[in-house]
Image 1 (cartoon, rainbow, N blue to C red):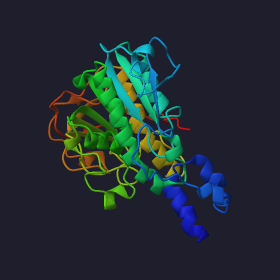
Image 2: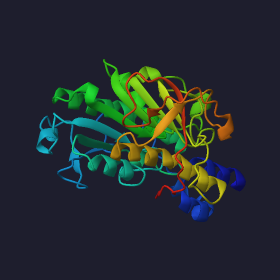
Image 3: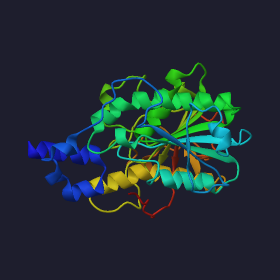
Length: 325
């Protein structure tokens, strides 16, 4: 029993502290007290929305969609582009890699940055309940999306960026809208259990937006392996990233987070990462077997052209570890 619980913690925890102390905590019933939402009522006190702008910097302002003036009074500019950032399991909007994404957008002047914080519903070790809760997160975030549109936002200037389970939440938002989202960026969409048991209602697919862009960095372990977007990027072979060191779990978790770091870099630097068409799916074990189809590259990430399709491979030549909390 102890071994089974320990393995469950390692697979679904993605948590450095749990490797050291989690084996003792499994005997504590409070440790396994998970929040499983059984309602579909929004707003929900466990789901919070925050606004950041270039003018306010890292000072966040909570958005209340029940107040029709909440956005405008918070400094939101309807003439700017919008990004909605959604974290994954065992995450929060105030931890990496979400802060890395937020800061990349803050370095620009042309974005309103909205973050979704569902930390109480995503905490370790409650992966199964977190997975179930994604339906409510998507429903409530769809109300935020509609609230923005009602206040003058343009759908074609709005992007949902989600990491891990957050990527699937971005996709599920479309289940609650009467129009298709314009753009979704899925950062190493989560694989555990979803690859076996989820249908298209739960999973990010190319049907969820006019442009669905996916970056694979830990394909086959914590991240999805298939091409699920209009354009998918397989980075450094897509499985383990060169800057990630240590035991296998730490390397996997680090690689999983690298997707956010790579994308953030493209937000900061125009056309900074060029990828090339390749065959098959992620992961690709050997660069010599990537199956490059041409040398006509496209930018990965923020500047990926609308209408691009297919699988693309890129070697970042990076040996920098992506920090994570």
